[in-house]
Image (cartoon, rainbow, N blue to C red; front, side):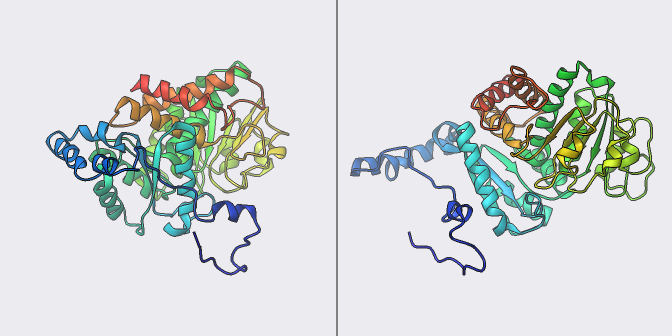
Length: 387
């Protein structure tokens, strides 16, 4: 295949990263033979017409007689891609291809990237609803907050297949798994903790929710303005709900004030947390600085003040990475024929991830490696049972 490539001023074709992406990272392959006229008559016309007629009479047959039951759409509008922000649908495609490749590699799930050229929630909901008959699940990806909450909620109400915004729920599941094992090491209980979440976007909101579900004693969430609390001006509806379900002691102020006496810091903001703020944390502190590629706190700095440190990066111990969660979650949901992914399924996924790492637990091994082949099957089994 001949490809026309831009000038060397844009990309370096000697760079192995660009070479790996040349031509994309995905392709489709046939699962039936296509070598003879008889093969063609079975896989395509005229034989395929009989299957079409059967599905027209009983639509549930699409689950067993097409690839729909094993197919996920990875959908984005390109507004919150990695740490790059709003780079648009075309520039987001390499990430969505990568996500689809991870589905296939880790959970034997087929996935197709869908990059939409619109930021309008109504248009996104309409587009995804229109293509939904082709898919067994919808993975929303890299859609900015607060629009992502509305889009997910509306699609869950419209569709009878799982809809899962991975930036929210995948991150939350792995954070809970990591925290579970950190507490195992320290012989502590969730109900005794104060957790400070720095960042109130997609991930921060979902983390606060799942930690509440897991019984954490108190959760304080900070955005760029400071601590979210009841009565604060100009809170959007999502943050108003956060104010009602977190910050039980009514704290006010900035992130430094939120961290005073806090047991756990979970950073999902992309901003910076000063070292001086860590000095006010409780003894035996736990720091998850998850902004990527630059954590909110340098891991070496965090280690001066925390007993356990995790990041989102692969070059430090304790990588909290969504790939530990989403392949197995979708595998389990698809195998169960689930119409949605429930809170119970997310909690089960977190428990399965934590249990694998618990077999060889240490301060620098509170989650399994993303490459551990046990993870996706264990998560899938837990999710299927919870479904």
